Length: 223
Image (tube, rainbow, N blue to C red; front, side, top):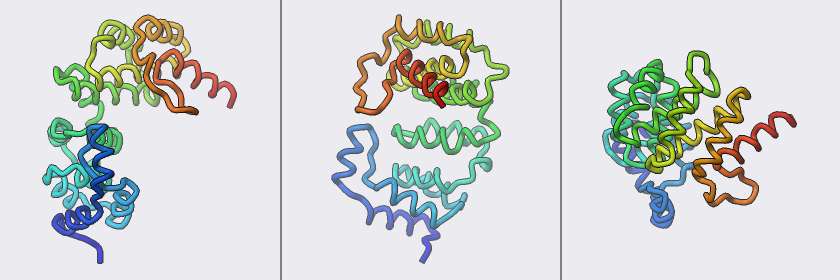
């Protein structure tokens, strides 16, 4: 039987809750204990159900909100709804999935990017920078890349963690995608030393911008 009400879905999520998984997730700021593979399987079964997604979002439950993101219709949200949802997103996973799976697909993405990037809330601002990074990679026309580097150079070093991470990603993306700005992007990264000592698993690329840029460009040229 396909669950069609929020109550039914919440009951299913409660059955899937694993306290040990929640304990692991809480170390990363995410207060849920549902396997993401199982969550995606539920989403695949439910398919797109926008009204149900809205009801699940209203529960304020992290697992339910992640599922809501997977079954919603991104283009159905008004600009103000997306702005409110981002400010309600309490955990990193919900925040990241909302930006990646919903806001980026919305016709309001550019308006929100401009509004969020300068928001006084650093978590909201990080979403604006994530959208900017998307444009740097896929639709750079009209962006002031040199101006973005100016802001990163002036503000990234002392930015709060999530905002710093987002600005660093933008710095790396500029260096990777735009050869004319590559030397400056690497120089900024070297001078600021942001994430230089970030622990990186074997086989993974360091988020330290000079290493990240150099490695991704090498891969592009070798392809």
